[in-house]
Image (tube, rainbow, N blue to C red; front, side):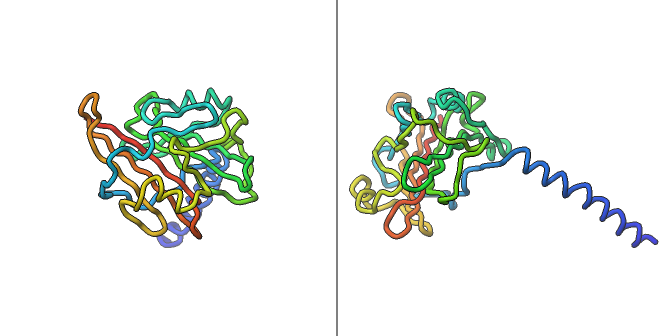
Length: 217
Protein backbone atom coordinates (compact mmCIF):
# COMPACT_ATOMS: atom_id res chain seq x y z
CA UNK A 1 0.00 0.00 0.00
CA UNK A 2 2.84 2.37 0.76
CA UNK A 3 4.36 1.80 -2.68
CA UNK A 4 0.99 2.33 -4.35
CA UNK A 5 0.41 5.54 -2.40
CA UNK A 6 3.88 6.78 -3.31
CA UNK A 7 3.24 6.00 -6.98
CA UNK A 8 -0.03 7.96 -6.98
CA UNK A 9 1.73 10.89 -5.24
CA UNK A 10 4.48 11.00 -7.89
CA UNK A 11 1.92 10.92 -10.69
CA UNK A 12 0.02 13.83 -9.15
CA UNK A 13 3.25 15.84 -8.79
CA UNK A 14 4.17 15.25 -12.43
CA UNK A 15 0.71 16.28 -13.59
CA UNK A 16 0.94 19.48 -11.57
CA UNK A 17 4.52 20.40 -12.45
CA UNK A 18 4.70 19.74 -16.19
CA UNK A 19 1.93 22.14 -17.24
CA UNK A 20 3.43 24.85 -15.00
CA UNK A 21 6.84 24.45 -16.66
CA UNK A 22 5.34 24.62 -20.13
CA UNK A 23 3.22 27.61 -19.17
CA UNK A 24 6.22 29.46 -17.73
CA UNK A 25 8.14 28.98 -20.96
CA UNK A 26 5.25 30.26 -23.07
CA UNK A 27 4.76 33.32 -20.88
CA UNK A 28 8.39 34.44 -20.71
CA UNK A 29 9.34 33.69 -24.32
CA UNK A 30 12.85 33.38 -22.92
CA UNK A 31 15.63 34.59 -25.27
CA UNK A 32 18.81 34.47 -23.15
CA UNK A 33 22.23 35.29 -24.61
CA UNK A 34 24.01 32.13 -25.82
CA UNK A 35 26.39 30.51 -23.38
CA UNK A 36 30.05 31.39 -23.77
CA UNK A 37 33.04 29.07 -23.31
CA UNK A 38 34.83 29.28 -19.96
CA UNK A 39 36.58 32.66 -19.88
CA UNK A 40 38.31 32.26 -16.51
CA UNK A 41 42.02 33.12 -16.41
CA UNK A 42 42.31 34.41 -19.96
CA UNK A 43 45.86 35.57 -20.62
CA UNK A 44 46.05 39.34 -21.05
CA UNK A 45 48.07 40.29 -24.13
CA UNK A 46 46.51 43.55 -25.36
CA UNK A 47 47.92 46.92 -24.35
CA UNK A 48 44.51 48.65 -24.52
CA UNK A 49 40.85 47.55 -24.46
CA UNK A 50 39.78 45.98 -27.79
CA UNK A 51 36.57 48.02 -27.82
CA UNK A 52 34.57 50.11 -25.37
CA UNK A 53 31.35 50.60 -27.30
CA UNK A 54 28.80 49.25 -29.74
CA UNK A 55 27.31 51.40 -32.48
CA UNK A 56 23.59 51.01 -33.22
CA UNK A 57 23.22 53.38 -36.13
CA UNK A 58 24.10 56.75 -34.60
CA UNK A 59 23.43 55.53 -31.07
CA UNK A 60 26.67 54.95 -29.18
CA UNK A 61 26.26 52.26 -26.52
CA UNK A 62 29.22 52.62 -24.15
CA UNK A 63 30.14 49.83 -21.78
CA UNK A 64 29.59 50.78 -18.12
CA UNK A 65 27.87 54.06 -19.09
CA UNK A 66 24.81 53.45 -21.28
CA UNK A 67 21.85 51.75 -19.58
CA UNK A 68 19.50 49.09 -20.92
CA UNK A 69 16.65 51.55 -20.38
CA UNK A 70 18.32 54.10 -22.66
CA UNK A 71 18.76 51.52 -25.40
CA UNK A 72 15.17 50.35 -24.99
CA UNK A 73 13.90 53.93 -25.23
CA UNK A 74 15.94 54.63 -28.37
CA UNK A 75 14.66 51.42 -29.97
CA UNK A 76 11.07 52.26 -29.07
CA UNK A 77 10.57 48.79 -27.64
CA UNK A 78 12.15 45.54 -26.57
CA UNK A 79 11.76 43.53 -23.39
CA UNK A 80 14.35 43.67 -20.60
CA UNK A 81 14.64 40.04 -19.51
CA UNK A 82 16.34 38.59 -16.45
CA UNK A 83 17.89 35.40 -15.12
CA UNK A 84 19.98 34.41 -12.10
CA UNK A 85 20.84 36.11 -8.81
CA UNK A 86 23.82 37.94 -7.29
CA UNK A 87 27.00 37.13 -9.22
CA UNK A 88 25.03 35.09 -11.76
CA UNK A 89 22.49 37.88 -12.33
CA UNK A 90 21.99 38.87 -15.95
CA UNK A 91 19.59 41.35 -17.58
CA UNK A 92 19.44 41.89 -21.32
CA UNK A 93 17.72 43.22 -24.40
CA UNK A 94 17.49 41.02 -27.50
CA UNK A 95 16.97 42.35 -31.03
CA UNK A 96 16.76 40.76 -34.47
CA UNK A 97 18.34 42.31 -37.56
CA UNK A 98 16.85 41.26 -40.88
CA UNK A 99 18.36 43.89 -43.17
CA UNK A 100 21.54 42.00 -44.10
CA UNK A 101 22.00 38.92 -46.28
CA UNK A 102 21.49 36.63 -43.32
CA UNK A 103 19.48 37.41 -40.16
CA UNK A 104 21.42 38.34 -37.04
CA UNK A 105 20.53 38.47 -33.38
CA UNK A 106 22.14 40.74 -30.83
CA UNK A 107 22.01 40.74 -27.05
CA UNK A 108 22.93 43.80 -24.99
CA UNK A 109 23.48 42.74 -21.39
CA UNK A 110 24.00 44.04 -17.87
CA UNK A 111 25.33 41.90 -15.02
CA UNK A 112 25.71 42.36 -11.28
CA UNK A 113 28.18 45.23 -11.72
CA UNK A 114 25.55 47.09 -13.77
CA UNK A 115 23.70 47.93 -10.56
CA UNK A 116 20.08 49.01 -10.32
CA UNK A 117 20.47 51.21 -13.41
CA UNK A 118 21.50 48.16 -15.49
CA UNK A 119 24.47 49.75 -17.22
CA UNK A 120 25.64 47.75 -20.22
CA UNK A 121 28.53 45.40 -19.50
CA UNK A 122 28.57 43.02 -22.44
CA UNK A 123 27.35 42.46 -25.97
CA UNK A 124 26.79 39.33 -28.06
CA UNK A 125 25.93 39.09 -31.75
CA UNK A 126 25.52 36.00 -33.93
CA UNK A 127 24.50 35.03 -37.43
CA UNK A 128 21.09 33.40 -37.12
CA UNK A 129 18.96 30.98 -39.08
CA UNK A 130 17.39 32.20 -42.31
CA UNK A 131 14.05 31.29 -40.73
CA UNK A 132 14.63 33.70 -37.83
CA UNK A 133 12.00 36.39 -37.38
CA UNK A 134 11.46 39.12 -34.83
CA UNK A 135 9.35 38.25 -31.78
CA UNK A 136 7.83 39.99 -28.77
CA UNK A 137 10.95 39.28 -26.71
CA UNK A 138 13.46 39.76 -29.54
CA UNK A 139 11.88 42.29 -31.92
CA UNK A 140 13.36 43.57 -35.14
CA UNK A 141 15.83 46.38 -34.56
CA UNK A 142 14.38 49.63 -36.00
CA UNK A 143 15.99 51.19 -39.06
CA UNK A 144 17.37 54.18 -37.12
CA UNK A 145 19.52 51.82 -35.02
CA UNK A 146 21.12 50.10 -38.00
CA UNK A 147 23.71 49.17 -39.06
CA UNK A 148 25.25 47.61 -35.95
CA UNK A 149 29.01 47.45 -35.48
CA UNK A 150 31.69 47.50 -32.84
CA UNK A 151 33.62 50.70 -32.31
CA UNK A 152 36.55 49.16 -34.19
CA UNK A 153 34.50 48.37 -37.36
CA UNK A 154 34.76 44.60 -36.85
CA UNK A 155 31.53 42.73 -37.45
CA UNK A 156 29.89 39.44 -38.36
CA UNK A 157 31.16 38.22 -41.70
CA UNK A 158 34.56 39.86 -41.24
CA UNK A 159 37.49 37.71 -42.31
CA UNK A 160 40.36 36.43 -40.22
CA UNK A 161 42.65 38.77 -42.16
CA UNK A 162 40.59 41.75 -40.97
CA UNK A 163 40.65 40.42 -37.41
CA UNK A 164 44.42 39.91 -37.42
CA UNK A 165 45.00 43.32 -38.98
CA UNK A 166 43.23 44.92 -36.01
CA UNK A 167 44.48 42.74 -33.14
CA UNK A 168 47.13 40.32 -34.34
CA UNK A 169 47.20 36.84 -32.88
CA UNK A 170 44.60 36.04 -30.18
CA UNK A 171 45.42 35.97 -26.49
CA UNK A 172 44.15 32.38 -26.54
CA UNK A 173 41.88 30.01 -28.48
CA UNK A 174 39.21 27.85 -26.89
CA UNK A 175 37.48 25.59 -29.38
CA UNK A 176 36.46 27.71 -32.35
CA UNK A 177 36.50 30.89 -30.24
CA UNK A 178 39.38 33.36 -30.48
CA UNK A 179 39.79 35.58 -27.41
CA UNK A 180 41.56 38.91 -27.08
CA UNK A 181 41.99 40.11 -23.50
CA UNK A 182 43.13 43.31 -21.82
CA UNK A 183 43.81 43.87 -18.12
CA UNK A 184 45.10 47.16 -16.72
CA UNK A 185 44.43 50.32 -14.75
CA UNK A 186 42.05 53.15 -15.60
CA UNK A 187 44.31 56.22 -15.87
CA UNK A 188 41.76 58.59 -14.30
CA UNK A 189 41.30 56.70 -11.03
CA UNK A 190 43.63 53.71 -10.93
CA UNK A 191 40.75 51.23 -10.85
CA UNK A 192 41.26 47.74 -12.32
CA UNK A 193 39.74 47.17 -15.75
CA UNK A 194 39.27 43.97 -17.73
CA UNK A 195 38.05 43.99 -21.34
CA UNK A 196 37.45 40.96 -23.54
CA UNK A 197 36.69 40.46 -27.21
CA UNK A 198 35.66 36.98 -28.33
CA UNK A 199 35.00 35.90 -31.91
CA UNK A 200 33.68 32.55 -33.07
CA UNK A 201 35.19 31.55 -36.40
CA UNK A 202 33.73 29.20 -39.02
CA UNK A 203 35.29 28.68 -42.46
CA UNK A 204 37.52 31.71 -42.02
CA UNK A 205 34.64 34.07 -41.20
CA UNK A 206 33.37 35.56 -37.94
CA UNK A 207 29.93 34.13 -37.17
CA UNK A 208 29.59 35.35 -33.55
CA UNK A 209 30.99 38.22 -31.53
CA UNK A 210 31.24 38.83 -27.80
CA UNK A 211 32.60 41.95 -26.09
CA UNK A 212 32.65 42.95 -22.42
CA UNK A 213 34.21 45.43 -20.04
CA UNK A 214 34.30 45.54 -16.25
CA UNK A 215 35.93 48.06 -13.91
CA UNK A 216 36.42 47.48 -10.19
CA UNK A 217 38.19 49.38 -7.40
